[in-house]
Length: 165
Length: 112
Image 1 (tube, rainbow over the protein chains, first blue to last red):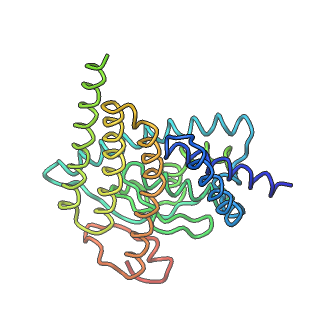
Image 2 (image 1 turned 60 degrees about the vertical axis):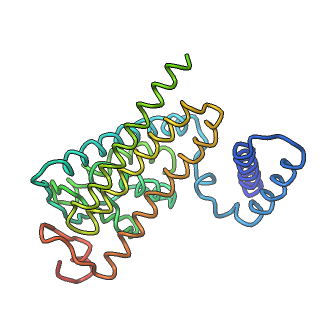
Image 3 (image 1 turned 120 degrees about the vertical axis):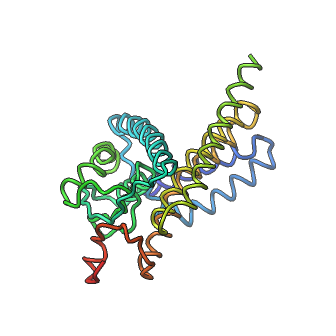
């Protein structure tokens, strides 16, 4: 039952993307899109964790929105911070790779977390190993696991936890 | 109305290309591969998104396609950077002498 729902969600989404990309609802265009999306969703719908692991509950949608806004804010902050580092003649760096820990359990939640960290102020996920994330930090403020986790991971984790668990 | 959109589009394009320029500058100035990836990832993501938004203001008919391009960039950019960084670390790429700590190498049993 759940499989069928996943399959339908993936199919509808793929057709939606196809229509957006083509900008046309002509019969032949639509038909090609429907068939191609059908084959893709038959083959891959069980692996599309992005959609299928999302908890489609009202709090999850709220968290998704807050996550997105928080993400945009962090993205802008990271660019301004990096720009100031690159432009300053002294190049004030203190790089290092620190270890952090995540409470997230799902594969998708961890992937989103790693991606978000990569796009935020001066941090870049180097390796994912179970609940441990190794993060390259341009200006290391703390090498302690707890402190680094609070600084780097916690902001995104609170939203992603509601979305994916 | 057209004038306002054109102005906004121009401003967004200038902002986007400025971030792209700063990203390029970062690639040249940063000391090692990890710091370069940092400069490359963030600046190109925001720079490209702002440029796309600027183009969307100048050519409103392209907006949906530009939005899709933006989404794909948001999803693929961090993944490619992360894989590059991981590969660089696995083959033992030389780190800048400024590097203060490397927990990953420590956990793998190497000296940083």
